[in-house]
Structures are given as structure tokens and as C-alpha cells.
Length: 148
Length: 164
Image 1 (spheres, rainbow over the protein chains, first blue to last red):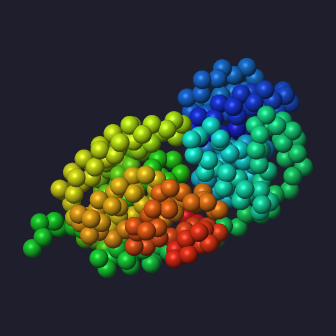
Image 2: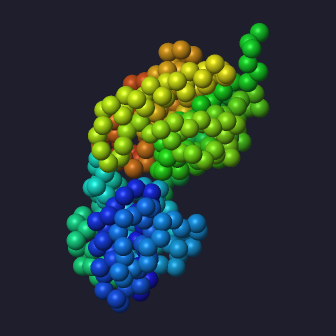
């Protein structure tokens, strides 16, 4: 099974380390910018140019709870595990993690040490379909600006 | 007669998610803007967006990993210097922000010194809690939009906009 772990451009070393310790039945690719961890099992890269293709090639994507990444993955209909990054000073990633869990869009990994357990759960998990309420204020904002 | 030929809209955003949101907004908004409007951008993202006529780089105001008030003060000072140079060369009549911290400084600066209209879109990652920037921008901005309807209970006078 192909697992993509993506942490974006912010440091999330605990997730990188636990992803590297997953059993060999998982083919793990980790995207982590400037990670200091030396991987023993997984493949680690700084940055993926064509991230959408990487998303589509993965069976399950384990993603930090950055909203941009989460929404993109949900829009693509991928099965995901969302991991709020508590290594940051601010804890704002909690909000979106609660949201996706409550709505049934994904599983949430609240404790990174449980990655293997949640990955097994995720294999059987059936996410609710994500239907976004698209932004509808473009014309209004344009009118405000054009009338200045 | 004004010395400026164009009216300037200044977009303010942090790199990462805030940048993605501004890019989604401006990609859709830019074609609707009048020809006498130019768009500037100010951010800690290095890349100049395709919809921006001129891009200004400033350091992020605070670190994501360590609280350092001295660094914040230093970055505020640098930001103000940048905003002053923008004001000298353009007629900023509107500030659009998607957060975080630079939005506050730019909004206050151009509201006070240029009478600019302030439009803020609260981040798509908040559902149940205030962001520091959003909490203050709610009182500073002329138009305050929330992308998640759950936030209306925290910001009763906000407009729900749907998600970028």
C-alpha cells in the first residue's frame, strides 16, 4: 500500500519519525521541508513539484492539518488522515481537525505515536463525501473596489 | 489633479495557507477590476503572484515555533518602513487581507494615513475559535468575511462568503 505523508513547509519532526517507523508492508513517501531526520525505511523528500499527482498515486495520504492541504485532498476525494501539528506555537490546526472528524470527512491522528493503529483503521474507513460551499463574494468585492 | 494615475489595491498575506487563499481570491477577482486599478502585494512569501503588479517582501512578524517579542518588534519596524515606501509611490485606497499579522499593521497604517477601505477574509482554517488577527480585524475592517459559517456565532456582524 502506498502511503504519502506530507507536512508542508513547517517542521513536524515527530510525524516524520513515526512515519519512518511504519511496517515494511507500507511503501512510505514523506514530504517534509528541511527535516533533520535521517530515514531508515521511508523515502524522504523536501518538496514535491507536482503534488496533485503524488496525492493521486497514494492509497492513503497522511497530512498535517494545514487547511490548504486538507481541502485540496478532500476536493480530490482522497482517503486521508489529518494530523494537527502541536509543535507549532499556535494551536490553530485543532479547529480544522475537529471539523473534518465531526463531519466524517477523515480520521484524525491526535497522538502521532498511534499512527500505525490509525492507518489500519483508515483502511476500512469510509469517509463522507466532501461538498464545499464555494466562495460567492467575488462580484460583491469587485463592486466595492470599483466604486472607490 | 492627483499625481497618481491609478488607484492601488494592496493585498496582504502570509506565506503558506494565507497565500493560497489570496491567490484563489485574486485569480477570480482580478479580471473584474477596473482598468484604472493596480494591485500590489506585500507578504513574507517570496514569489510575486501573476495577478500582482508589484510585490514587496517583508519578514513574517512572528515565528511559528518560538515566541520572541524583540523579533516581533523589529519586524514591525521593518514592515512600517516598507509600508511607508509603498505609500510614497502609490495611492492605496483599499487593503485586502487574508492574514496573519502583516494584515493588521497594513490595515491600520493605510486606514489612518490614506483613509483606505479595509477588506478582510478570515482564514479558512478557523471554525470554532478566534485568530488573533481576525479578532482585531473584525473591529478595524470595513468588510469582514468568514469562510466557515460556524464563525458567525463568534463574529455576528461578519458576512458569510463560502470557502475559497
